[in-house]
Image 1 (cartoon, one colour):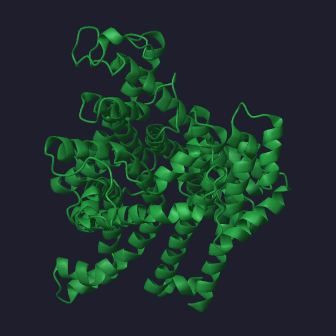
Image 2 (cartoon, chains in turn blue, brown):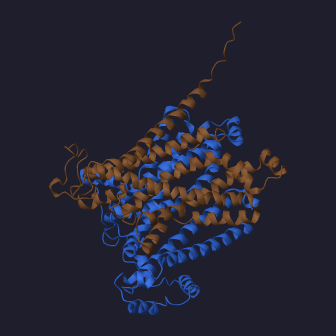
Image 3 (cartoon, one colour):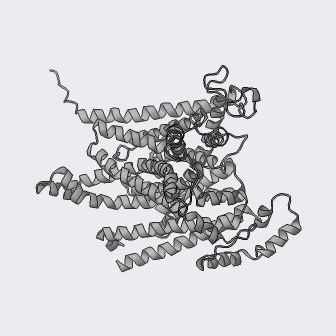
Length: 315
Length: 289
């Protein structure tokens, strides 16, 4: 297990390094002169040069890269060109919105998908299974932001039960915060569920045909008992993997849902800075998100090794 | 003497009927979608970008405006038709570039030794863990938004999945006996890849392309909804939803049509992809639909 964990750790560090180089080069290569981008079309050459010198943008690229990455490692994410605010301060305030939203969305997706997917697998070839497969196909085709729009029309505008957008801070009125999160979480969770149902269904189908389930049935368990007692633990492996892969999707969904419901989360901050051409803010925030996703996948890999001895020993 | 035909096994027939339903619905929806985009080049109800203040906010089923007009009096049908072009350009553009790059990298990983395989596969793993939406935001921040940026972002984040799928399909083919005989006959690696491997994995490539065409349309709609995708005078369904929300509120019918268009087209392409998978690759047992 230690060797397996070490291998995964090396991969984690390598992945973070490659991703950081990629993001850095993407911004520098695609963006060209950062100072010119920040100052806009009408800036004079003198102003551009002054800004470039002030922020060390005229240094060689490798120097700038290591300066940025070493700063990141020490918790210094850089600062905004215009407001001079530290990126770290900008980010922290936003997480109290984005993290609850993303986690509850994922959780809701799993709570729906695991029983429904299992049911669909047990009823494969029957009309009820086919209907569930069709519903999941339609759910996959619905853009998450449109689901958000429809839900807020129904529950916000027509029924008036919940706010259609906006945010109350946790410290002011936590009930209000939760009310603001219900519809966003619902939109995110339902769309996640549609995707996850397919994977849960195929994982359970695989497990149902395994020898150990047949053995469990042979010693007298009912189909349901066999599935719950031996099957589900084995189906957990592929499901954990998929959750890891879906984290990237989840973050994409969160970005959009925050816009639909005007929540002051991380993505609104990124978008505002994209519009303002605050390259450093975008670069550092995006890097943080990517590190988070790679970290989740690292944890998933470790879990996978713990759940299945065959995997850690094969490695 | 008469030979009685063996009893037809019922489950098998039902399965085939089932598959055809997915394929038929997929083909119909997809052809409808392509046809609308093509027609839009020859005929539009009116110019989708020119405001007409007199005809603002016309309800659906108005004369000359079947689905009404938006807050600036622009015809909805015309905008939806031009939006179909954008979906095809960006979705198919992103998926095509990813198909080309993914085929090259996937084949190299499968056929050019352990080192190439390890480097390419690990690289693909890393790229797969980068959220595509976020990459697109970075590109929009530096290159400015637009159809070209969106295509670039899509292909960057689709390519690793193509690499993975094509690599594993190619590895399967490379173990076949006819590959060995081609090698013994003295054929070079490139010849074998081009003449034997690619034709045998074409089905996988087509399916993958179809499914990512759909994913590209969804992502493009999302980016344009956020305002970092395509911009006017191009029109995108996601952009229309954004404008509907900004200008007239979400409860108007304007927030319905573009969303419905996205769902139908993405559903059609996904059904088509699943249906094609069953037809083109009967060995692959369908589990995930």
